[in-house]
Length: 151
Length: 107
Image 1 (cartoon, each protein chain N blue to C red):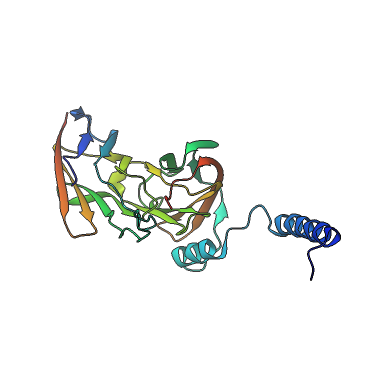
Image 2 (tube, rainbow over the protein chains, first blue to last red):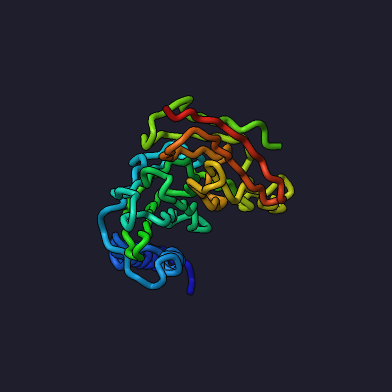
C-alpha cells in the first residue's frame, strides 16, 4: 500500500476506532489474566466476594516508587473470626504480585501498611482469606504520575 | 548492605491491648526489572520475607515481591498478654538474615 494522504487518513481513523473499542471491550472491573490467575491460585478457585476487606491507597500517586498502601479486614481476630492472610496485587505491574501478609491470633487486628511500587496508573487489588476459607476482595485505582519500575 | 533496622514498639502496654508496631530497614530492593548503563539487566535482589515473632510465636509475616518499595516499611498490630521480646527477621535473596529485637513491658 502506498502511503497517500487518503490512506494515512483512513488508517488513523481506523486506529482511533480500534482504541475506543478496545477500551470499551474491557470492563472496568476486569483484572488482567495474570492477576486473575494469581487470585484464583490464592483463593483455591473461589470467587472473592466484595466487602469486609478494605484497601486504602492514594487516588493520585506522584511517585510510583513509593506508594503507601494499607489493607485491613473487619474481623475480631479471635476464635474462628480470624484472617489468615491478605494478598496485594498491582494489576499493571510487570509482575502483579506485591506482597502477602500472614496474620495470627496475636496480631490483634488484621491491618498492615507498607509502601509499594507501581509502574503506571492501575488497579491495586487486595484479597483476604479468612480462617474458614471464605475470601473477600477490594480494589482501588491509583493514578501514577511517574512510574516506579525503572526501565 | 542493609543497615540497622529501625523499629518502633511501645515500651509498655496493658494486657490484651492492641499495639501498633512500625519497622523500617534500609535495603535497595533491586527489582530485577532495571537495566544498567550497558543495557544489561540488574539481577534481582530483594528482601523476600519479613517475620515478627513474640516469645517464639509468630505474630505477623509477610512475603515480599519486587513491587515492595526500597527500604521496606511495615506497620502492623500485635496483642500480647505478658511482658516479653519481639523478634524481627528479614530474609534477603542472597540468604543473609537481618535481625532485631524489641522488648515490651505488660502491666
